[in-house]
Image (cartoon, rainbow, N blue to C red):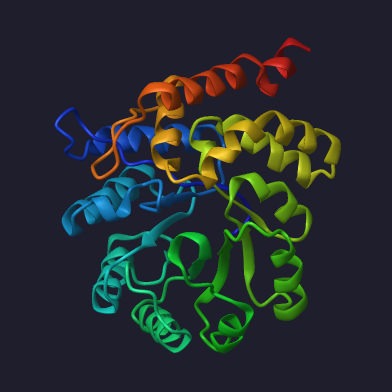
Length: 300
């Protein structure tokens, strides 16, 4: 685990905005068929906090039953309270997912001691390996090096999704923590920088629309072909910037729809993109689709 590209898979909705479990599994299966190394289920892009408790568990059940052990399945733990997060972690393990991605409790901004207590409680509730999710701009609390050091004695906290926009964090983390934690680049438009600086892999949003290129980028890095990795990254970058904006979920799901991989439907308070923003994103996706590196490779 914790190597390669793990797309944050979307949750698909029917026309009445009920969860379309078959369509959600179809999206997940297509990503696996295209060669991704694992899946993040019910992360931010999976609209975790827009689903009911029962819906979340049903999404996990369908994924486990439909995909088996083809790739690691990592369930996002994004709850309002520690009690709810603990119960969700227990249920996810019972359902059969491979690992958990644990976020700070939603809405409330904790102190360092509160955050550590929350993460310890969730870890104690499960035997599954845990990847912490650091996204200070969105969640208004940083899982800093000091916090990671205080959690180093928790054996099943094994990885960190690093979504701070400053690529210097990767070097600082490795210098201070060594190999105690596997690090996954978590922000699409600094992903290559993160992996070149020592991140083990990439938790990606835009891979949901262009998985083949994401897999090719990882393959290029694995064989040391920095030139090809850089060329793919440069081609991808206009879309990768969409991962760091407030409407990232709508933008990624619209990109999926343009590429014939899913529906753009989202649940409120999100609303599908409209007007000039919609035109802008569609134009970006269509340009990338017309110039994608995999097409050039086939032509050659």
